[in-house]
Image (tube, rainbow, N blue to C red):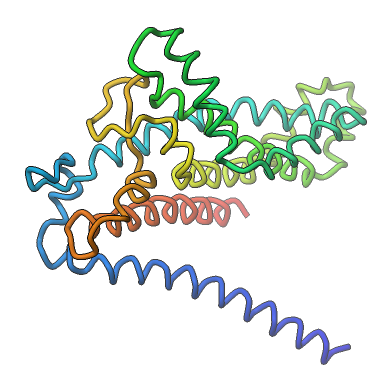
Length: 282
């Protein structure tokens, strides 16, 4: 048995080091391919200038702003819905209906993103266009609403698992004292489960920033700086998808590696911040 345990530990340790190595390897790959941009001295211009290749400007500022707007708005829409659904599934209705709803949420995670995109194009976009009578309907708002549906299942399942880890003795004590379900939620469960909730938020934000199809199909892909949520925008991921067919030696193509580094660092810093916060609260 000791020999088998040693083998299993070696395999698990090897898998962990392999995952870490692949993650660092991807970052190194992106930095290596960004070296031509760094050597050219155009990095600051790429990060701050507008995108206008015809005029020799290859800035991705509008794409960074569009990515932040869409990811933040989608998270703002999905967070209260996901939190409420998690309470419903795990706390207030742990009966057959709650289990059925959880199964439906798990089924939503298996739906391809392109299906959400088609629904958004043919159903949501006309509604937004007719409701606000502004633009084509392909906007930050349209992309954010549909993206919130994409990231909500992940948040709901993650929040539910966090609530389930709260010691049952705590919730039983609230029931013994005659506490209501809402008192149990706000005074016992949330204070105990908030590190998991924060982790779910960061992962969902990274998922929203990394999505390509929803932004590509619904945001309008405008390279101008958006001034409202009804304006069209282009995200970093959709920009990569549209520019990747360019000539390999062109500056247009080389900027996509800068986009990749920005996405990587943004999500990596978020995960790193959560890890530090989790360690401080242990």
